[in-house]
Amino acid sequence: MKPHAISIVRTLREAGYQSYFVGGCVRDLIVGREPADYDVATNATPSEVMRLFPVTFAVGAQFGVVLVPPPNGGRDDSRVVEVATFRSDVSYSDGRRPDEVRYSQDAREDVERRDFTINGLLLDPLKLGSLEDEVIDFVGGRKDIAAKIIRTIGDPELRLTEDKLRLLRAVRFAARFDYEIEPRTFAAVCRLAPVIHQVSRERVADELTKMLTEGRARRAFELLDSSGLLHEVLPEISAMKGVAQPPQYHPEGDVWTHTLKLLENLPQGCSRTLAWGALLHDVGKPPTFRVAPDRIRFDRHVDVGVKMAEEICKRLRLSNADTEQILSLIHHHMQFADMPRMKESTLKRFLRLPQFEEHLEQHRLDCLASHRDLALYEFAREKLAATPEEKMRPAPLLTGDDLIQHGYGPGPRFKEILSAVEDAQLEGRLHSKEEALAWAQAEFPV
Ligand code: ATP
Ligand code: MG
Image 1 (cartoon, helix red, strand yellow):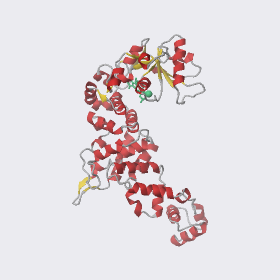
Image 2 (cartoon, protein in one colour):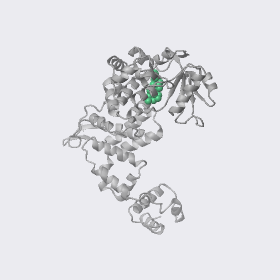
Image 3 (tube, protein in one colour):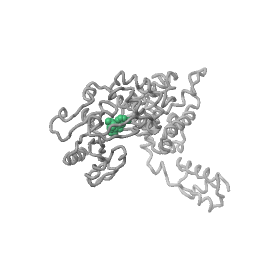
Image 4 (cartoon, helix red, strand yellow):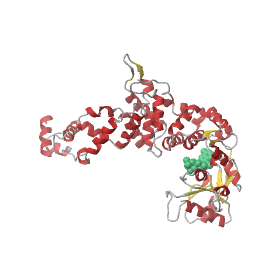
């Protein structure tokens, strides 16, 4: 990827334009992290860029962005480079995007419109020498990287007001790199937290998902909390604070403390659904908290939690597939405790839930964040390892057609009969079609 990005800079330069690496990739090269993608900034206009390269995709030409794939690569090639024309953004009246994009000849103007100093660096990859020589810094980004500080370029209030997504980006970068947010920048984030709603929910959700899956999710959520952003975007999580739990099951403390401990152990690069499941698995506890005579109880917190999570996923416009899996993770999270007493058929149905490995991992995180006893986790893993696929998901012994052939009328009863037959099969009580049919006829007379 990097050679392709360098060759783009060279092609532009040879055609007489200015061109540099810019933004996140420069920051990442300085901190010694592999950049996820390379962005090139140039004074060439989009149409000039499109003329210079044989294949380009003008996805964001109105913002001056052209995608340049590597030779023989397509638009979705992971090595595709974004080539953006230097621009200055003119006024943001909606708090989301610039009213007008004005192209510029000046690299300095281009970095000054960017969000944080660490994201405002340029790098000349054609210059031979150390990073010191290659990096061009108009905004004080190098110093802030060295001091581990997230600071807006220019006046914090103004820059965060222009595009409110930057409120969440400040938190995300601070968490991801384990930097501090500079005090004036942080004060502005806190003051502006209530206007985060001007940003589309998809963009908010996207930032939250990144915070959950990029590592250091705990720090991200602590910063969301202390800035007041959590109360705005996920009040249901905010409500976990101070909700006590029975100490015999939860020596770690309240529901918020427990949830933070799960987030702390979410691995970098974990799936979106596991991350959201871990965050939301106990979301039903605050509204179901009750001090019973024996101990604190959260009656029906799973059902309540599933309903609340459904609302949250809908509000944040998560995909239907992700939502379904997240709700499943919440719905089943208390069932690990029942495993040793489950009938064989129930146990197998549990272990064959779609993406069971996420259920298992969420359970492990849940245990590590409370009593730390992994006995049930080990039990599930052993069962899983000891049950071959054909025992877990055997081919059905009977079908609806078989039932029709033997005089059963189609209807809701079919499902009941077939499911009972499968249970008996999973428990090893039925082995053949003939056995299954005889058993069904005895148990469910026509
Ligand atoms: P990541 O590693 O998560 O991709 P990044 O810094 O590369 O982080 P991108 O969203 O890919 O972030 O954006 C690339 C660059 O564009 C940023 O480094 C920053 O300079 C600029 N940028 C992105 N989003 C904004 C924004 N909302 N406001 C101002 N500048 C932005
Ligand atoms: Mg990027």
